[in-house]
Image 1 (cartoon, rainbow, N blue to C red):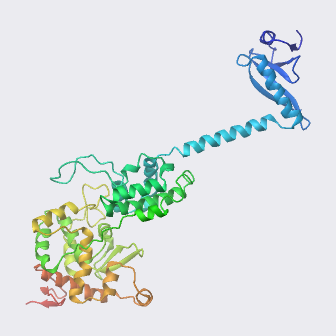
Image 2: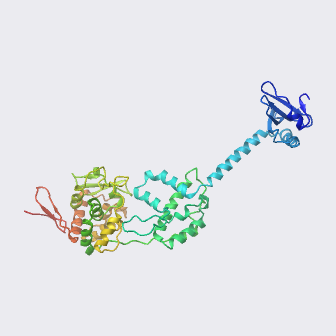
Image 3: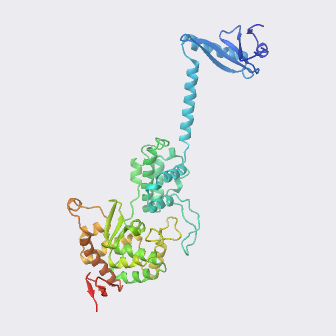
Length: 442
């Protein structure tokens, strides 16, 4: 039989070598051979010269290939190598690389919105405030859980983005988002508009992340139909009126939890954003100069007056950790959501619903009763300056802010029926009157 074979049977009986492997050649088809290893494994191979070099390619296992099929494949490879100077190994490597790329791309396009949304939160939450993080969780909540609010009945409703969670990223097309906006916006326009803004930020992040880049259609949030479908947010105007102050203070001061009571009064009397006050630390209080340092979404921080009544409220709070508004139950160790207590107080007082942000709005509105300059109000509340002169030329010192802020606090307390006595320098009892002055007593 020698070093050649002519049939499949002969090829199957070719003797193995004592070491390494042996090659046997088909006498009918140039370049076709059988490689036999020492262990007896047999496979068809093809050998030819490309660019002056010997190129050997494995065709397949002897048991898997018929001789006629192996001969046909060998003739094809001979054409590639001899006539076209193509190295089959290079072609095979390119095919493998393309197959791998196709597989990876297929896996990329299999990403589900819900899973990537979770990855988005995990990637960004370190730079978010607690309220912003809670917003991202709430808009995608599946609902169906028992309401946690005291006395609440029924089950929670799904968040506005919950219907999109099962979709693949590639399915977040402009048509899908426009239809979602119309459907959800008809039921809850304000929360849907907010959810849309969060979704738009998510898509921007996804397009900046290599793993997800290019999966979501480029016009998913910018197409004309999408922009037309964005619901108009209902402008909120909830605000405490002057005549409502006595009932509000009576109910809020009666809240059993002094931390929540002080927090709600601080929102009204200092006018900060909810998270700015919730993140107040004991180290942010300057008792020497009566200042209070707050985080600011426009600037990094701002310092506002620590007015007498607010200072008295804070001085009575327990110092359990670094937070002024300590919480024993919140994971962060600070107050997170006092809305339930506030809503209960409003119900007791017989007042209409007022949001926590409505208390901040009340500060700005009530300031007009004492004719506080709008620039002073804006600087205390951390509003962006509205004019060039305000932005570049007016930097009011803390004492100037305090003179107006103390006056407003005294007026609100007087209108709210709150009797507040302070102890100024000289250890004489004094009362802060409605015009902001301090009247000493005997």
